[in-house]
Amino acid sequence: MSDIEQFGPWVSKEAQARFAAFLTESATPADLSEARPYFAAYNQRLLDKATARYAVDIAEREIAGVKVYDVVPSGGASESPVLLCLHGGAFMWGEGPGALLEAVPIAAASGMRVLAIDYRLAPDHVYPAAVDDIVAVYRAVTETVDPASIGFYGCSAGAVLTTQAVAHCLDQGLPPPGAIGLFHGAPVPFAGDAALAQALFDPRVRSGAIPKIEDLPYFSGADLSDPLVLAAGHPDLLAHFPPSLLISATRDFAASAVSVMHRRLLAAGVDASFVLFDGLWHAHHMDVDLPESVETYKIVAGFFRKYLG
Image (cartoon, rainbow, N blue to C red; front, side, top):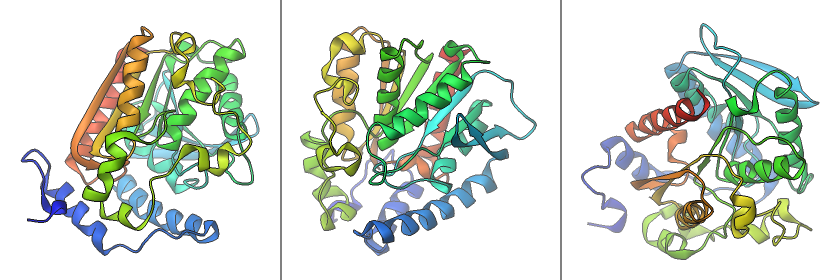
């Protein structure tokens, strides 16, 4: 049995089949001009499955000069709680269908309104452009919604942006959101055993290196020692973070980083929980066909219901 065929008995057949399919997919384009349409098409295929499975209403809006997608369960949702969804994509892609892909199932599972923020992308817009967009939307939303009833969540780059948004809110004297979700990403270098193990488990990684935060164009010119950029190494700041849910998987290159972030939040006295899926990969919950994805949505929905009311 090859390494990519080895799964625990608790990994669904759907997940095992999806992992095997990775072998047949073309490599991610290295050139940004090709990567953006590649991921737009890839995310659109996943979004089509999500909207077919989950009944939601989607409206494109502008809040504080920033494009957002307003996603609510069909039939509507109350004005609060509200979730702000921050998409992934290495800070360089993931707009449009990628932003919606992370919002549709969570809106349906939670019964909450989700605002998916189409923030500005690198390399044209570097730090702090994306987090400035997020904080501007948050500031506008707090004019009508109690911050304690607002949650942030994001996957991969969106998880890092979630931590930046909290840090910037605190720095600007804004009340922080009531709760946050950090999925498959953290403001910690993508290193440790999880990064080392990827060449053994994930065939997609064999053709490319694990991303390094310091090499991402979004951080060009940024001081990585600044707590507003990467908060994980600053316990005094973390102590003011809201309740946090962290999710990763054993075949996620960011799993060690997410685990370290969880420990640092706990050490700072934050109410934080960490869920690790065995045998799954980076951003596994983007595929709504996986039973583990459905389980993820329920975990996220339950967390935000608990802390946002």
